[in-house]
Length: 292
Image 1 (cartoon, one colour):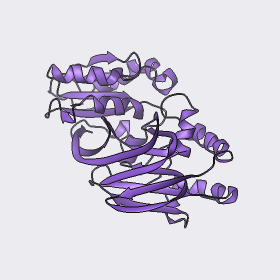
Image 2 (image 1 turned 90 degrees about the vertical axis):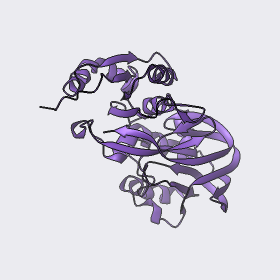
Image 3 (image 1 turned 60 degrees about the horizontal axis):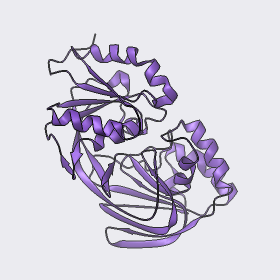
Image 4 (image 1 turned 180 degrees about the vertical axis):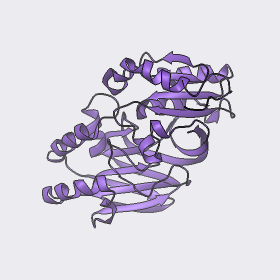
């Protein structure tokens, strides 16, 4: 039996729409799991985009010190952003847990967080990535990846759905010209996609940056060059196995600050879609305390 914690009741922010509505249908079972660790749980259900951010801010302003994100990567992104105002923590003592219940759960997978492995007793200080006025937790990619997500419903998706869409979009997507700067060092060329990773996994299980760690104070930049159809098909399994970085048409850099210039196109971070021709990113080391 799980050991109960004596801390005040945490707030669970539940996205009932995550996992195509399955989170709502299985919430009572998930709640029972949490109640094996905590005497009480405060329940807050989201009602639309960015609502999880508003709820987190409200709870933290009222003195809450432990919030549990129940959903997928998109829910986690929104809750994590709710921990801050103007880039500063609302409550520096607060911690964030994640109870994976989405379609992707890629950030949790990258950290090795599984429901059965949770104890809600260990602290892990993780990096966040500032991108304008918001942070992202896991991966931002501009180009083919953004185009795929823009054609899917909002949020992350299973690896099967993402892979099928990737195959379809590849054959009609033309590589774009990029200028990329990593800690002052520049490279340029035509690429299918440029990804900036804090975590190692995205797209429902693709190991885009296997060496990336959200607690090392560095960003991994992966630029996938123009591949022929044959090269692309042969490379897809390597993307899941984490061996794509050895491909001669894939560039990999690490740094603390990244700037990308290209033509106006779709991008996504943690499943959230945007359009941009220029992106500036900066790692914020150890900014968020996760309780796992």
